[in-house]
Image 1 (cartoon, rainbow, N blue to C red):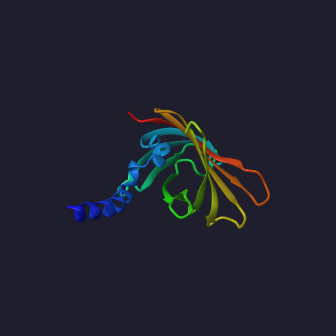
Image 2: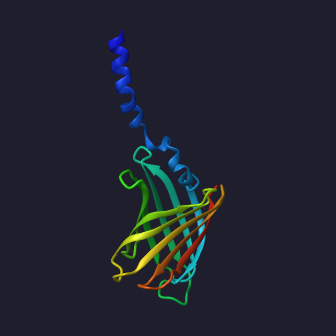
Image 3: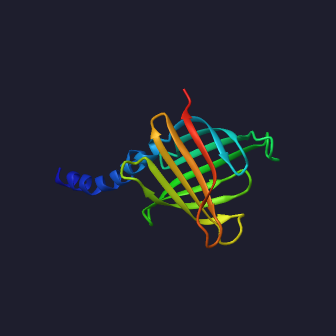
Length: 177
């Protein structure tokens, strides 16, 4: 009996360490983003209509965000163009940081590290540590501002070398019923 209890005591920490990460409180700020969303955007490419789906995937170890953007502005060459993007948020156990990887339909790949989550959990900000298919030295910043259960704002900003960030695009999302 004592041997069985000793084995259980040694085995239990291993089992609990392997619980799915969706049970971990560290993912709480991202739970507010899960669901189906629709919104309107503005930015360098003009106005847009945007649909997004955000969900936990692979046993809750990652957050997947898929977006579909339809550009509206007739004054740009982008009018009527459709862009699909994919973003994955993961947790780097070694660095103890969340990482956002965005794959944009235009070819840009942004790997960004979490800069901050506001104390109320309503503002989440990532800054790029690597941009693929962008000019050398450029940086990007992604911000999620959660207004409540039914809406949030997504902002994407760029900064050329030595300059401050400027808004590239912004989308105001409402939860799709």
